[in-house]
Length: 117
Image (cartoon, rainbow, N blue to C red):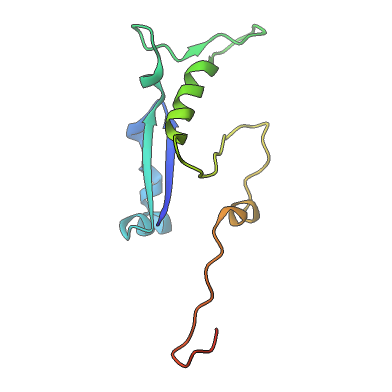
């Protein structure tokens, strides 16, 4: 099964966007990975489909409502054991090593004479 990414976003029309270019775009065309988007606003329950609110401690700006985001994450994760990545300035850096730890280990290949390698 190819790698599949589900992106929770307020702007699903932005995808695949830059991901459809260069190496990732070629892999997308070949079916080596797939991308799905999930509109976070679909999980809002009020008539205006509100997804943001003022910060709990006050201050400038807006934050996504945790209850709405949790519903979207639960929907995207239903019966799915893929890793979940939350892009946050407070998180650990996403490194090649961390990503490699999530990949399944490929089975050793065998040559025509039965030897490995």
